[in-house]
Amino acid sequence: MKRFLSILVMGIVYASILLVCEIGLGLNGRQIFVIYIVSAVIIFVGAILFNLIYNVVHIKKINKLVSLFDEGKFDECIDKLNAMEKTTKSKHIKNMAKLNMACAFMKKKDYVEAKYIFECFGSSLEKMPEVEMTRRLNLCLCYFHLKKYEKAQELYTDSKPFFDKYRETDDYYEYFILLDVFMYVVFNKDATEARKRLHEARLLCKDEEFEEDFECLESIINFPNSV
Image (cartoon, one colour):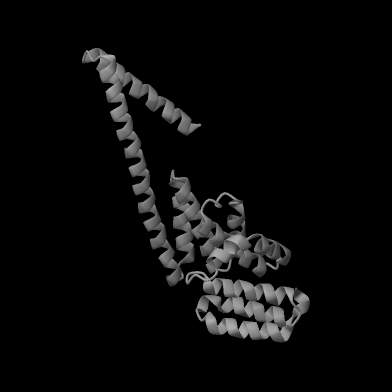
């Protein structure tokens, strides 16, 4: 509603300016039409450039905040992303801020809050396949940590078209290894094979961020009745 009113006011102001030009400068209809077309193009291009620059600047700010992950400053990152999400006018920036907030909650092992944010998007990100894929991937991992195994399996199956496209890429390869091990350990009863796959995953995913995931998997293997 606010956007509609803003556009309406701008339209009235713009029409008034053209009317003043027509009367004050004694311009004819053809001249006013040319002014209208040229100014409309300038305004349109200017709006696109402004929006593009605005998004680029804020994406850089988000990327800078995400670098706080490496310092373990998750709460600071969450607070700043939350402030950005509340103040920005760009829907894209709002979405990126919320997604990275959810990732920050995952980093601090708050899977409940992360799950809530990821679920809030619904299917609204499907026009951005890679972004939607990362949302689904992280949501699957949240479900596993929260022992919502049926939801994890359902989402994993439903996400196959998204996952298959990116599972071999360098940025996501390790996360898909982890997710696949979760799927096997939870939904298969072969403890020997599960331990073998977990061992292989440890060799491939050496970053410390995966250690808690591996401990969770080991616990599931050792105590299968908890599943």
